[in-house]
Length: 111
Length: 114
Image (cartoon, rainbow over the protein chains, first blue to last red):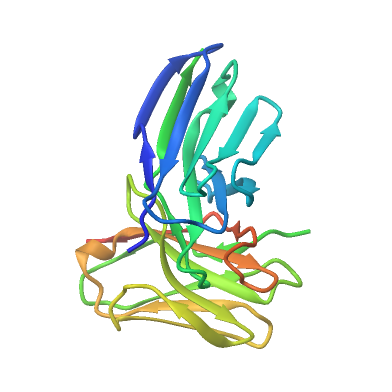
């Protein structure tokens, strides 16, 4: 069974700090997607990583896909209160049409 | 352009009742997927429909059913509601529904079972 485990589950930091959240699996994924979800809203796609070792940057957010395509990380530089939200990683299950999600990392950035 | 729209936004039901949730995809998108998100967890896949045909089903009981209409909108039906069905139900659309494609989510229907 393919599973995605995210860590930490919860992170509370001060504005300006850096942080890294992780998405790990024992299975190989053809791609991984990262979403951010704010309270009362649906998840919004941030990025899709496809190639092993790939690094993508989105302003202060840096996403990396592991060489073996079993894990991914999201690094935020100089976090801001607007970064607060639930960060979810997701990947296709067994090359099917099903998308499985991790349980998420809830980030709180305090002013 | 309008995003994915879901209705209603909130719903309160009692155990044993049934519920119908509705979703309109982004214009031009032919695939709709449904997810259940329990508080504190990530979304769990329920169904995917493409061109009115069911293309995938998650590990949910037969009390859950769905359909897609010719205009690509979709309904999720849940019968014999249980307390554990309380959750945020999310609808997502994409062009072809391939799981490598980005999913565009609506803001969900929050269902509370009393």
